[in-house]
Image 1: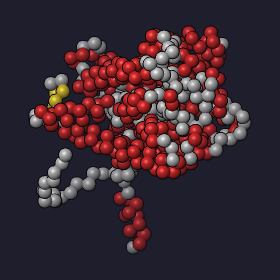
Image 2 (image 1 turned 90 degrees about the vertical axis):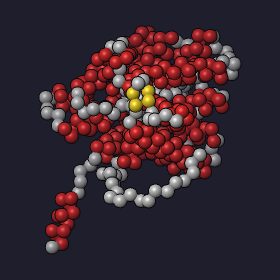
Image 3 (image 1 turned 30 degrees about the horizontal axis):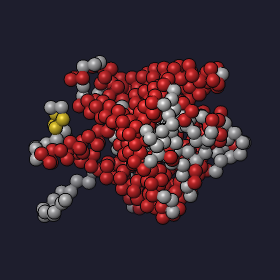
Image 4 (image 1 turned 30 degrees about the vertical axis):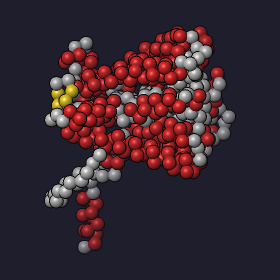
Length: 454
């Protein structure tokens, strides 16, 4: 009787949900990367890195963040660098997308379950055409990363020689497209990132273009590739993403210029100021590179960077953050409430109420996570509030920017930042949903009672 009871429990056990599967997949990727990075030959000095440091680096690479506890060029051997760039590529595209594409190459049937996982992974609006989207993502990635690497090679090969210059070009093209922010410029000074190229139009424009293309989202790619320049025919999501990206890039760049032109950028040429301002606006939205000293930014610029990091890129992209669409949906909802109009409308379309609910949940969860972790870190280490908030919002937004405190974090603080990076990549709401497998629908509604709000 007891055996039958146990068998019945096992039989009723449900398989992992889509969010759980994706969360578990990223966890496996992170642990595998951490183990590989602890190997002695992964480090240049031949000594194994401590597991927490390796785990931090693996999480940052897999979650395409860019925060590091050791300079990538100084710490890691060629093997270690290859492990890091591989995790960046898998983490940026998503292991589900890569798995689907491999199945296509092997001519295996793509089942409904795999199609559903692919839809969840890429934030696709419909399950129809999901296999075609997977092909487009892989081919498009190869084209953009390959093109970016060729353009960067124009600068890097003459400077570093053919083999090293080619490797640098490929590494930074992949890192930029995946919005990861890892760099190999430590030989110019540890943690300098791309500072030596602050006024180089070629390097800046290539890196910025790759960051933006990777950050607008695969659904937007697909829509633009099918409808070309017919803006009126684009999906509502595509219209919102394009316009919001333009506003954040050029609006953010203009504000950076006004805040820093007479301070951090005072000694730069006009060309250098413009490039540095635009680059700061682009990279803050989850890329993690920098061409000016982030730690030396004014308080106004730090606040602007935190806002941009929190917003991040767009759904179904290589970028993190709460996403551009989330911010726009909430702004439209507030506008609708003020105007006392029915529904939330944009471009002649009404938004689904579910989108508003999800946007509110995403913003609230991410904000509370970042603030909560900041409070704990400040309690543990007594770090300055501005630096701690900057670090926490950088982690939850998978932005990878820092004022320089990353390598000084205590073990508890590193563990919390690891958690934020993980939540930021798979989605804080998805992380919360991974602990539940089904909706709880109440059969009876509770009595209604009003409260005062605002």
